[in-house]
Image (cartoon, rainbow, N blue to C red; front, side):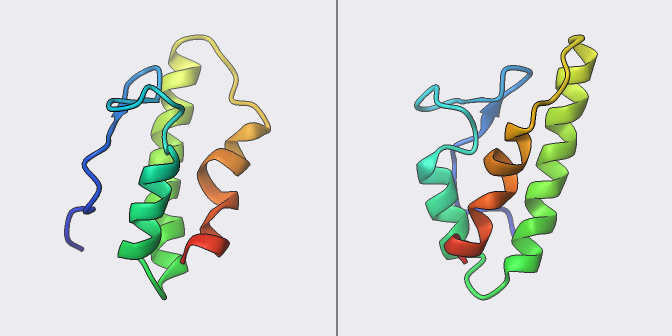
Length: 82
């Protein structure tokens, strides 16, 4: 699979967007990924699942517990984006 067309990346371990400092994935990332994965919501889900696992690892390494917002942050928007 080619690299994502978005150039906005999360700053780890905070998971804030490098460009706008909003929680990653920010709206521009969601929009870019929605276009890139048009018609392929399952692939987008897998892509975001990999990021969600990194997010969980970063949070637990820092002694934090991922919250219920994890689903809405990484997955809820996928259905409407692709």
